[in-house]
Amino acid sequence: MADWLQDVRTLARTLVVKLQHLLAEAPAGSLQLTGVLGLAALVYGLYQLRGPGRRDDDAGPPAPRASRGPSTSTLTQQPKQAQSSSASQQARTSAPTTLAQAVQTQLAGVRQMTISAPGVLLDQWTPDQLQDSASVRQQAVPLLLELAKNANVFLITHVIDDVGESTVRGALEDVGLVGASEGQIKPHRLVFCSTLEGKVSIVRQLEPELHIDGHPATVEDLKRFMPQILHIIQPGSQAAAVGNKNVGSAGSLAEVFSFSG
Image (tube, rainbow, N blue to C red; front, side, top):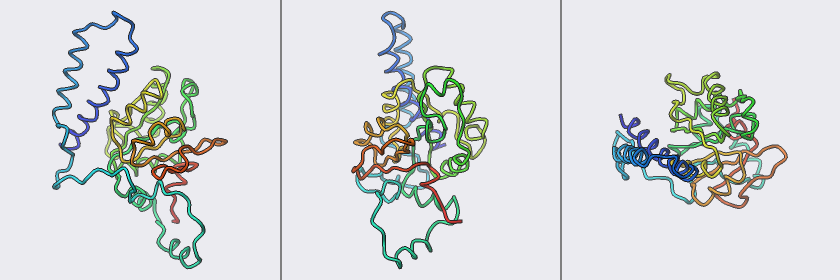
């Protein structure tokens, strides 16, 4: 029940963002005032089901949110100089040997995360490419399912229109990532937007401890607000927000969550 209530609160926040963009982009006179007020009242009512200060934790007092400073997660740690041979040997000995161990190690302290699908889960990097097709990176499928076991995962995709949305949704459902079955990412946690600004707004409303993105502009826009950001770098591009302690970079998700097994 607590998870359901938390999802209601999250959906309410997302609806607020979409309502704001709808009002900003709609032509004058195209929206009925009563309809807008009714939708706003519905969103407000859903949000109040939780209240601004509660968390989804049935076991006791809620854990504090991750601070904007250093985190126990190793995802955003910048590369260091080579260690001594003894330290390197110790690191190899203690390295995760299964995917589950690698995910648990890297996600220490992360309870909610957002992932921008293009370039991270999908081979396609731009909304234009998603108009024609969407192909899921096969190595990302078991990894995403494992991530979903350890944190609340929201997938966000920047598309042009309903065609791109249908293409992406179908691809994610076909490989078993999104669905109603246990272990899958629930359909209501798959979110779409039509602008990069909209994606930034959605991420900020969801307040994740970790955001993963393949677009450098989004990383730059969010670096001041997120506890941790992981930038998946497009081949031939440069890492974004270099020098920020809360921002890390990698060539792929598989590179970050690697294990020695």
